Image (tube, rainbow, N blue to C red):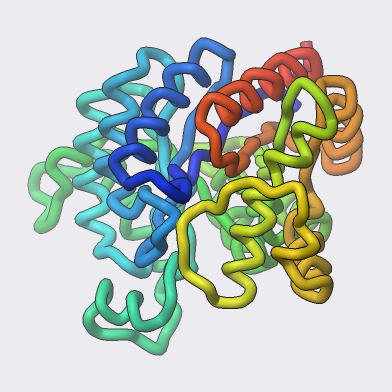
Length: 331
């Protein structure tokens, strides 16, 4: 592992508003930069009461404005929801303002339910144009002649680094074919992680952006000063994922000492599978579990994420994780 980074879903806790979530994200970004995180990503989700990062490019600009050196980016932009030219202009603008600090991670899923996807896209297309859209977007961000009939302004010549995101084998194959860095969403969909990494590394074709494969995996973390406290804090995320599984909309729940009364056993089994790529506990336990994941999957970069109801506890969790990851980085 060469670097470690942070994914923030900008959670909206029960009893709080989206304004609190966005303020918390800014505060966490400042703390993450001080703690040594290499990059800080936010993700596009829509029509979710518990997530405030729907206007992802706008939020990236806000986070970049309160930090100085850390890379800020999308993990990711759900490209089927947008025209490639619009994304190129948005991220070209961000890159022009915050030169050398902006990442553009691209996903293929809608990031929402189908009714909301319909509202976003207006006209739902049956064919999958994601590979073509990625290449079109990359073209707009690359050097283009002044005579080109369509140019991204700002955008042309910024060469904002593009990442392919995924939780299946599709993204691994596409990232390998296009010679792009690849980030796997193992923090909620770890089932195909090993197979996807193998495909990406075996089939990678060098490109102008990247000469060798570069794989990042996402891992859930919840750290505290004791193992028991970490498990208690994590109960909010477990309840949140249980609500997703059972199609209940809501904000990030308060933690509980009695998860069994909140989450039925069959739902808990499903949630545990979704969140199996995680490290939870005090410093020593966290280091042991993160070391095992790094040893097993050999990522070039590890991105941590976690939903904790109490904001100071969330900042503390990522501070502890940064201390541990700093010791695990290859020297």
